[in-house]
Image (cartoon, rainbow, N blue to C red; front, side, top):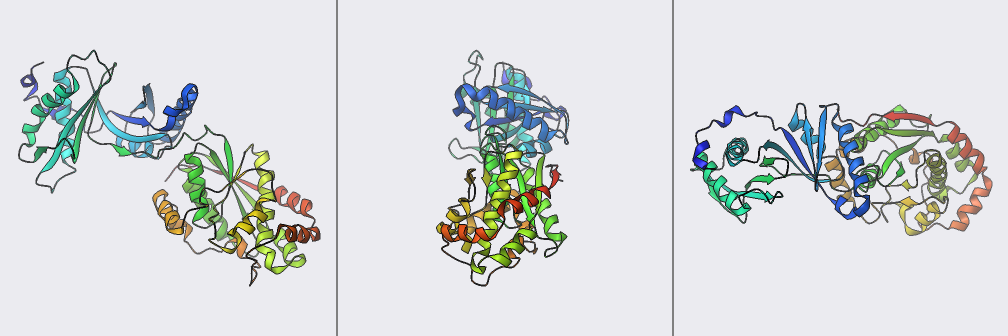
Length: 412
């Protein structure tokens, strides 16, 4: 147990690549008796997400998951950051529960970490030990001090101890099975594991909002499928390609998905020819909701998702949202309802959909767009206008023409 026994042992013998990833749970702690089921789904999501990078084995522990990839640990770590259910992720090295072994690995990990500070003349530093195994003979504060005494001489000109606001924390976690040593705590995606709260269907447009709404719903544990509407021959193939790319980008956060592509031009032609011009957009969206509800029931989805934000455009006033929502009986989730545009854009940039969303491709709702759309629509007027349509026949025809596209969900 003498720190000097490992003082000159060369840290370079250890691998440059971390051995494992320590991924910490977030809201799973609130799930009580259901937590085991949530953990099992989370473990499945991890294995599915990382399999194209490396096979991995998992070890569940109290409040966290240890992930042991066969290779490319840092790349796997970045992938795990995007998996809902984890608050933070640390690439780590494991060690026997022995001071000499821990000290040797700590020197190595600190050496790796200092490469992140090539220009700083001094770095505020501390050691922090968590002693989950209370049988370990050295208490946390004493181990902190002894490890610091052991590792700091390698960087004595550049490290200074700061217990309150360290730039670099060398962490040691003493567990019943072994010890983990790491110096990074990367932010996780948070939320709940996808698949723990059922299925939902997102009405995916080519804009900024709906992909973010899908992502937020995934974060709350829902598995999300997508439905989009195209208006051939009025809108070309570019719009359909863009929708597929957006579905692919968002599905990175949950894995393989389905996109239901619906022919919508006939519905629009009928509404154009038989209904008031000012109500066209609201009536389009009522028809979209009906079609989406039919698809959702077949797909065993319990809710629809839209990117509506209150007051953002004419169809998103309280009155018009009431008219649109009244067309269906299924719940409609609107995660962005009180977001302003800048908040939505910030999230779109974060999840990697913004640049796709702003590519100039026309949306199907622009087809036959009225010059003066109604701002405060009346449900009674909507229902009266729809007496001029064979609503059920139009929904049947649209659903019969659906193309199902499988979305792989891996980011490439």
